[in-house]
Length: 321
Image (cartoon, rainbow, N blue to C red; front, side, top):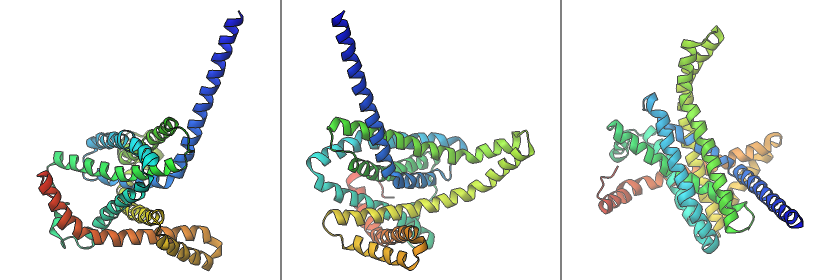
């Protein structure tokens, strides 16, 4: 009997340790996810623009393809790479993130350039030409997954930075929880956004009450404008995040002058209007990061379209886009 009681005590102790570990993982994952909340919002704002131009029947399958690619980015590629680099080569993380930030700035600036000068560059214009729907869908999904990769890398790095220096296994578990949770949150939200117009159509046609039908008609009318607004927000988010990654990356490699300049300008703006100083400082910082992203992205357009793309096509045998 005493042996059985001792065994039960051991089982109880193990259960308590396991429960504490689960609580610790959940708590650290929530903390890390909160730290990366701004990037999550950017990710959710960027993704719906890849759904434009497709039939309603293809929207959810496309979201599902992108979400699977996002999970692969986070769990299969970025999680092990982040842990290995953090443990053995932390000095390369900032330069790699800066490359990703430059890519986001280029993507955002390319959209702005195309909007302002739709016929100014044939190579940029060709990237927006109509293509075979199947090919176009594959291209859009691939583009969304590439953009997700950069944002996911930043999310995973920010999350890792707030996780205590514990065992690599515990860090891996917490990062995995963060990755799955953020992916579900982002792409669940995207699915709701892109299907809202279909919900509106259903309500306007099948609603039992006049108010329900009116709500449906309102959704149908509002969603095109909302999607256009979200596309704009997504472009601005790419510029903002790209610029902020560059600024923070420069700090990490020992060049904090740009971050200090932006901080000083934001603080000066906040002092000018003390009543809204906190919000105004954030807006000024985000705006300056976005301007930096736009300037950098515009500078990268000729390099990307006339140098990198032709070289890549020669190496891979694929026609440049």
